[in-house]
Every structure is written in structure tokens, then in C-alpha cells.
Image (tube, rainbow, N blue to C red; front, side, top):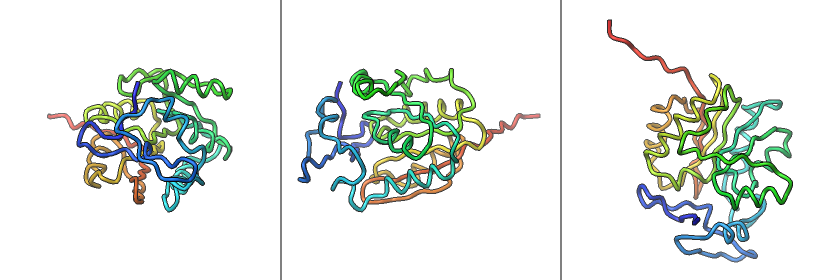
Length: 212
């Protein structure tokens, strides 16, 4: 399995695979094997690659809205960096990923990761979840896969639950508005930095108007 440095929808790059190794800038090839990704990805948010970015502060804003005591389901947990941070702040995180390499890597750290593929909609056993978190994932999905993912996330969240995701800043903000509105989510905040749009939205009720 490879992680692509480019979005297969509009050839937009996913910046989480542009790594800084030993404090030096490194531009990896378009495709990177997952073991190499695991080896090179900075472990925390203090690495030079994150300087000036708003990932950590955006997650903090999301957590404040979710409120302690609530459970967050994370899709695409990867190396567990974000889940580790959220748990360190006192939140319970249900970690999921579709790739055995990531699941095995986290298992070695004593973390349980459920094998789930967001694109396939095989997460519907979850219901009334308090919050959802998806980071550095949608940049690798096609537009139709993102739509499917939003539908899945909508189905598993309770009404008014919060949902954080990010997409590369090469996206148009109008794309974000469209995907949220069509997916049944109201945008709470869009935060842009040099790499990502960080989006916090909230699940709303969908009302279908029937003809008389």
C-alpha cells in the first residue's frame, strides 16, 4: 500500500506527506510506502514542518466544543499522533484505520485500532457518537469517496455532534461549503493556514420536503 502525495480528484497535494526529517526539509516522491511514512512523520506538533501551522490550535478548538467526557471516533488514525494528543487532554478516542501497517504500528504501542474503511461505509454499527475526527485523509480521496464518507459520518453521529476534518489549502473554500451542506453539516469554523483548511462543523437534522 502506498500513500499518495497528490489528490486523485484534482491533483492537489496532501501536505502531511511533505515531511521534515531531522530538522531538514525533505520532499518525498509522489508515492510513499506506509512504513517509510511511519518512520519519517514527526511524532508531535513541535517539529519544524508544523511551524506556523494551525493544526494543534484547531484541534484544541474542536476539543473545547466537544467537551470532556464525550467520545470521539477517529477515521484514519494512522500513526496515532492526533489520538495520542486528544487522549492526553482527557478525551476518549475510538481509533480506526483501514491499513494493517498503521494498525500494527499502533498495536506495538499498546493501542487498539479497529479496522474500518470509511469509504466503504462499513462503520454503521456505530450510532449516536459524540464527535468525529478525520485528519490528512480527504486529500487522498476522490470527490465521490468524500461524499460517501460524509454520508457515513452523518449516519453515526448524534444530532448537533461536532466533526473536525482538514483538506489541503489548494481546495476552494466553496468546495468545503458544498460538501458540508450537502452532507448535512453546518460549518462552525473554517481556519486556513499555509497548508490546510481546518474545518469544524456540526451535524444537523436533514428534512426532506415531500410533495403534497
